[in-house]
Image 1: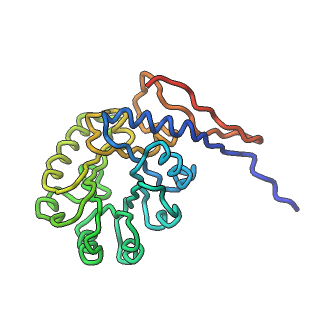
Image 2: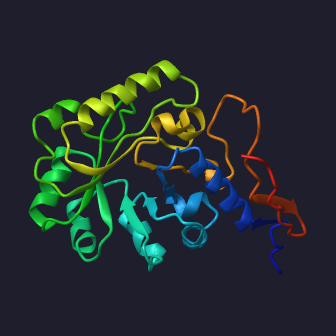
Image 3: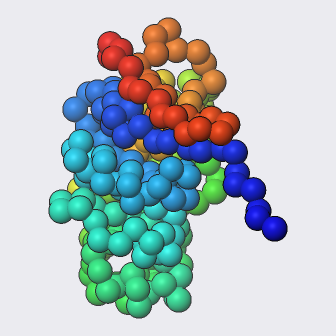
Length: 248
């Protein structure tokens, strides 16, 4: 007995993907614009997304785990990859074999990286209100990051889509903590932070995710839509969406 095929097909419009990422980059006031491609590029293919965005000028990419690093394979020339979940003891052999950066989230991870990282570059995550991952400002003031070769000190807004007061408070906390850290770059704006705050929160690097993958992170309606649908789902026959030409 033949098993029926699924009636659904998904086509990805690479031009629309690039259009959306370029719009987000334009909101950053000159800051570099990266891309989070964790969970296999949110289901549309991490490797394909990296290649497309690298051709458009993206240089900073982020995944969740070292397993996702392995799945990506070789990165495009000039691209930099970071791992949000940092390092565990079982990750160290793989993590120190290449040039991918861990995003260190705790004093324990920092201690592990000091011991086995051999002075390699890393990123550091601060907890400014997300209460998920990141060093506290007390950790930072106690010197947790001293002596590390830090490329990016980063944070993550907890509610940038609908709480301007809280977001401003988190920005102030981030600035206070980052002042104690010797890092080459600073980053806190995710997709919602870029859409809602623009250059105000862009700093040196922004890190959009689902917005550039065609899902809206903002609860507030936008007065104009600069995004294009880059995914289409159809029953039966596969079809693909086309990038719209929109201002912005």
